[in-house]
Image 1 (cartoon, rainbow, N blue to C red):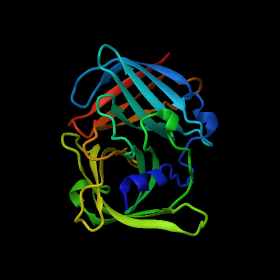
Image 2 (cartoon, helix red, strand yellow):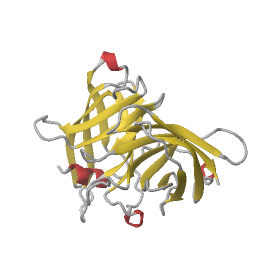
Image 3 (tube, rainbow, N blue to C red):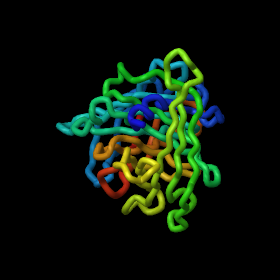
Image 4 (cartoon, helix red, strand yellow):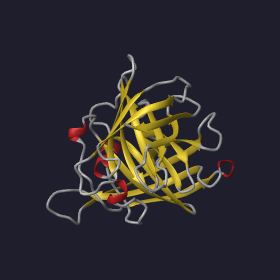
Length: 269
């Protein structure tokens, strides 16, 4: 089964477990612009500029398109974000390293419960926001840790991923199914907070299907998915829990290509 096809068909699989904030709670993000008051990548390089957050034209409001326009000749970055509680979880890439045409990429959140991960996906096969797919709600994933690694805590190790999704066409009973292996290993120089993600065919004999990087949160893993070699960054912006308008966002940055931990602080314009 083609991993990109699986990713597209499962582009927004959100279990209805009450993790996502209400529409009223999230409306302040839609159509907002933020100044990057402090920013440095995982390799330590500093940057400034602006971030624009726009909602997708979707039946739900928790998924956002993000664009960072950086000062000087640093280019721009594009991302997809999903709000879960008081966190905005983001997958982004730099303008000089976009995903290949037709390849799936996006943000993933794995909610942790014992040895089971429950996923939220938000992804696309396009780099053009106007072509991003519509929102879908459903289920069809089972992610069970098959090879725990005690050195990596409760999240590290190998997981068996079983997926099903509608095959399309006129017969709704027809589904496509398959299995994969997800390897979760410690990200170098990120202490206990960063993990590298790698997806492989279940047989273990084929090439790696995809890669990402993830933050270890109390709720689970918040990270990225993209084809191997595409440099994605995982950003988790903390939304202050306070009355009135939110004026600041901040959070850490992890990269598939760079070691270390970056950070970003934003002020609303």
